[in-house]
Length: 138
Length: 138
DNA sequence: TCCTACGATGGACACAGTCCAAGTCAAGAA
DNA sequence: TTCTTGACTTGGACTGTGTCCATCGTAGGA
Ligand SMILES: [Mn+2]
Ligand SMILES: [Mn+2]
Ligand SMILES: [Zn+2]
Ligand SMILES: [Zn+2]
Image (cartoon, rainbow over all chains, first blue to last red; front, side):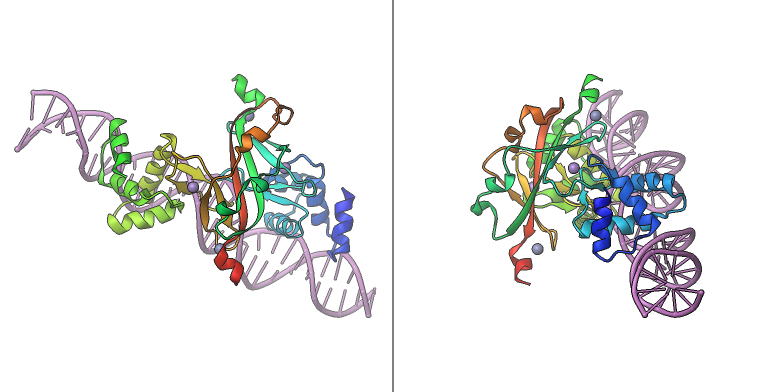
């Protein structure tokens, strides 16, 4: 995903080795990592990268819309680089695995005006919960 | 909601003043309080109640299905006593206000089998996000 | 090559939640 | 009514997650 690096350069970002490494970790569209997981993988490539920098970079990527923040449980937020393809999430209640899913309908269209209470509703996130095949066996 | 107290007694709970006060705070169906907010309101009624007891009691109420845990953001979980009426949530992105909403369709029916990846899907939670009337003005 | 503003660093801090050993008390027994 | 006992409560220590800040380093333009 040097696409991402290009877009960041285009936005005037300084290209530091730390930012390159964080972008590299998020590469591949199917990860939903916590900040500490990102830090661990980044540190494998660039040992002295700090937690603060990982948090800073993730925060910047989120506000640029390049990464989505997902709160699937009350624990650590997860960072989702699949930001350019609208989707929802299926979470295993047992092991926490997260999968991208694409429901047939946009749930926004199913919230009638009388249920909006004067809000300007901008988005809807659906979290499906259940047991993944592995956890269902056990 | 002495209904709730009755049900708890029926389940063999010891009726302590702490549990009574937590139940009283959650009374009324339209609150979505954090644990610390519950603790603050409970302490107004019973000054020496501890945080640990509030957390214990909330956890017990959740596992009995009397209260629902809601994670609307990456911050503190909220506790929702409206557990016997299935519903979803509309959250103000600005001030965090939470309202109960009832969409026209159950989002579970819109997740086709090919999008379930072998999971046994048990539930779907929708979080609608937008600006509440007050925050939209400003 | 040099300058400097932007970014990185680590450590302190804040907040949400869990755990535990010790003390207390609700409720059944007598 | 009093006694007994194990369920419950308590405060504080501890963990995990995230933020902040003063200082240092360096990317990238002049
Ligand atoms: Mn995703
Ligand atoms: Mn609710
Ligand atoms: Zn699983
Ligand atoms: Zn608002």
